[in-house]
Image (cartoon, rainbow, N blue to C red; front, side):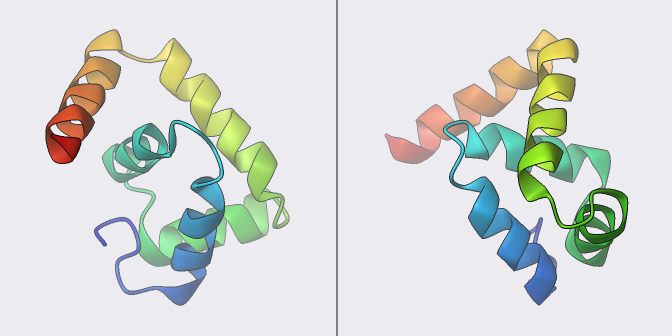
Length: 83
């Protein structure tokens, strides 16, 4: 809900990102980067020409290059959510 921020276009992107196995990491990363709501929709629409798969791959690459603590924290929160 935080990443969607009431924007239907962002919801569409989020639903598509859920095709990727680490979707919860993607959403956590997007929220941390401030890519929520209309900003998320704008980036995918304008910067990526609606090619959401490339957007997702680029975001995953940023996560892999990013801070390992951020990744571990997101995994930990996800583990608690399901237990």
